[in-house]
Image (cartoon, rainbow, N blue to C red; front, side, top):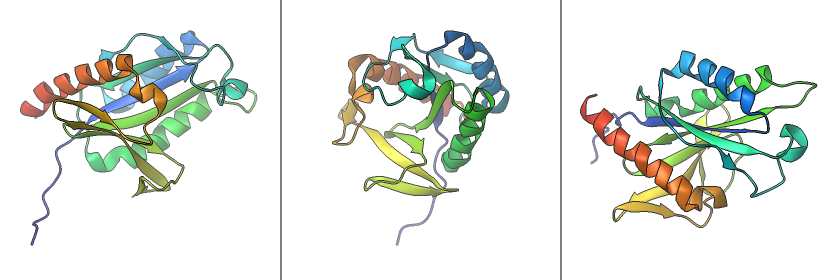
Length: 175
């Protein structure tokens, strides 16, 4: 019989997708107010994988990845997604979002993104939020899965996530 054990905390990451770079500073400040200081920030990358978000967010779209110094309980991902949804609404204008915020939780074994959309490979987390197993870490590297988003399969994203995972290794030892 397995004995339930509390899981280690994870490293919170948030993807910031916008056509207005000026939104980053206030959005990052709001995120830091809730989740603590930033620690690994990626560069701006063009986001041209899909036009899905352009009508609402504008164009050209860019993404910046953020991670946070304070580790969070793995069970907090659903509430984190609800909080980022509220921030998206706060920064909206004329009944449309201007920023898309996608939180995820990185651990030594995996990256799980939070979403409000159900699908076959997603696990219900509670509060109408699902966890998308996006990447797994095996054999010394991140492994993509058949459903991994193309932008999370790119080497620049994987390199960023390796940096965050390395930082997580130091952080978890001090936890």
